[in-house]
Structure formats: structure tokens, C-alpha cells
Image (cartoon, rainbow, N blue to C red; front, side, top):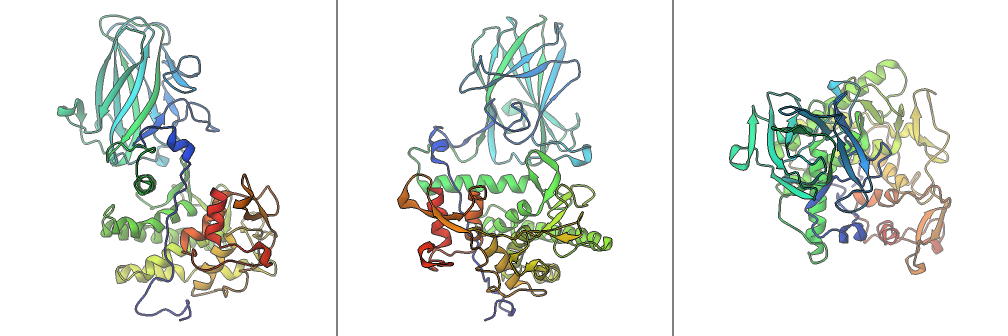
Length: 493
């Protein structure tokens, strides 16, 4: 059957696979995979060493305690955090600072949240060098950032200058040590606040925090002894919950990255849509919730598309990045052929599934009809993008051993309107060479220029189609023969 001839059976034409690239060195460095680093002084984020692993900054009160990165006094590793009072903090008073769970946008409308329901606890270590005891209150706030909806866990910090663990269960009730106000929603957590409360004695000086971790549900998992499938399973579903928990509840779109709450991206949104069918099958998500989410995304994309078309500039595919609130194109103001293809393919698979309700299928089909991949077709291959500022397509095209070419070609072949036959540009990537990183026996195909060898591009096609048994791609000559999936495996090794 021609892939573009739809049938009533709606049988899926591509199999969605999930290949999780586990770095063995990092995994073996920890004795328990379930302990997920959150704020530990060991990040190398461009935004600075205070940023936590979810992308959020420290939020400090003007004139209050200061938070600084510390390398001389640590519980473990190469970094910790020093909290210093601003002068003397009097008896029976308090000070605080916060840890945002995601990056901030220009206003409160741009707030992003995290789903913490997959974790059973929070732990960190404290070292008090003020010489006086005090209480340290760990406070959780949800998307409302309100005193009316929060939970507080109080721990007594002794005057002893020694590293002391503070464990807290993420079961927000009095029986587990929490003082709860209203109904804080762990599925939409926005902020951790740490409140310094003095008792009968004033304090002055510094204390340290290190190795703040989130403890995952499912029990400990030692990477040195655990079954490999169990490790992959744990990491894959952690990734899914991270994406699902960071979706914008109004639009369904996913932020470009953890630190950019204001920029929503096609590729991250596509990644979540691709995982939904398996998540439903494995019981991670209810089918009705997955269907409702896809419907929301489709509605949002139609709105974005309509707004772009109204300008008379572009509208071939949805813009690559949009503003969280206005939905206007932002960041790189362009329409990307590969990002559009990454979105098209999981939407097509969702449409093709027999379990997708008819009304949702019709809605998805209407959106798929709008994709115009033919506009990106050039004599040299697939144009990378349409730029709004230039009102033109880029002169450069995808080349080299870059599986963007295959992803775009497959999406364009399946597109019902303005489609392009899969053979048109399948072999347009000819700047390929054999190379290796360590072992000559693991030679793999890469772009001829070392500047264009991103490991993610090796996996793109294999994320969407199972090509393991489909033989080698011998273009442009047999000396460069390699199967795309096994080429990516060699690169990873």
C-alpha cells in the first residue's frame, strides 16, 4: 500500500522505539539510581553554579541571607552551598531563600512547574557553623505560589559543626511530619523554600547545604548489580514523567529546556507525544488523559498556525519556538523542516492507531493536512528552515551522515498534502566519512566536518522507525555501508 493512501484499518506505518543512552561511567558513580541529584553544587550549567538540576535558580530575599557556591567545604564531590546571614538574625525571627524548580519567564504568567508525584522523598545534608541551634523549615509551594497552599517540614539543626542528613517523606500530611495549608499539588510544584527560624538565641554566620536529592519511588536500584532492563526502564519513565510534568496545562506545549520557561518548542513537545502510546500501554497514563492532551496540542498548533498565516509570512509548518503566553514565534523565529518532521511523525502514528477516538483522529488529520514539506524541497536537498526575518528559506541544506534527512523524507512522504516522494532526497546527504572515537573496529559514519557530528542526530531516525533489520545504507558507495541504527550504536560505544 502506498503510505499516503489511507485505509479504514488505520494500521500504524512506523514503530516508535525508545532508545535511552545510558552513560555507564555516570551510572556506576552512584550506588543507587533512585537517588536523583537536585541541588548539589556540582552542575556546570551556563547560568551558573547555583542553578539546580531542574533548571531553576536560587530566589533570595533582598537584604536577606545570601547563597553562594562553595568548593572548600563540601559533603561530597566538588561543590556545596554556603548560606550566610546578613548580619545577626535576632531571636524569634526568620529568614528564607527559595529554589525554583524551573527557569523563570518575564512574569508570573510564564511560571513552569514540575511533577514530583514520582518521588517518595527529599534528602539533603546540613553543616552548621554559626555555633547556635536553629530550625530549618523545608516548604513546598505549587503553581499558585500562595501561602494558602503549601506544606512545611521542620527540622532542628544542632549547633554541632558536622554534616547531618535531613530526610523528608513526600507524603504531605501530619502523620509524616508536615504542616499543611490548603491543598498543595505535588503534580504542579513550583518552589522549594528553606526558612531559617531562630529560637531563643540569635544566630550569625554561615551554614552549608549539600547533596540535595529526590528519592524516586520503586525502591533502590544499584547500577552495578541491577538488571540492565530495569535500569533502562527506570530512566525511560523518569524521562517521561519529566516531560509530562513540565507540559503547559493550557496549551500542552513543552519548554525548550529546563531553564527557559518562556520558550516552548516543537521537538520537546513531539518527544512527549511519541511516548504517549507506550505510556498508556504500560499503565503510566490513562488513555483519556493522553487523548485529551493530544487534542489540546492540536488546538494550540492550529491557533499558532492561524496567527502566522495571518501575517502573510510563512505558515508552511508550525514555528519552531513560540512564546508560552502569546504563542508568537520567538527565539529563532523560523519554521524548521526537521522539527516539523519530528512533530508530524508521532502525530501521524497517533492518528493511525486504532485506539484513537474518531473525533480526535479527525482533528489530527485536519492538522496533518496543513504540513507543507514540499516548500522545503530544493535541488540540493532539504532546506533547514524558513526564516521570518528574511522571508526566505535558508540556502543551506541538511547533509552529511545526518539522519535529519531520513526523518524529513519519511514525514514528507506520509504528508497528505504538499508531500514529497521518499526517494527524492533520501540520498541527498553525501558528505559522509568513516571515523572512530576510540576503537577502529567501531568505525561509524559521521559528517565529513568534525563541527557537525552531534550524537543526537545519529539516533533521530531510529527513534521513530525500527531499522535494525533493514540492511545497510550503501550510499554514496559500498565502502561506507552502515545500517542507521547500528551506526548509532557504534557511535555510542
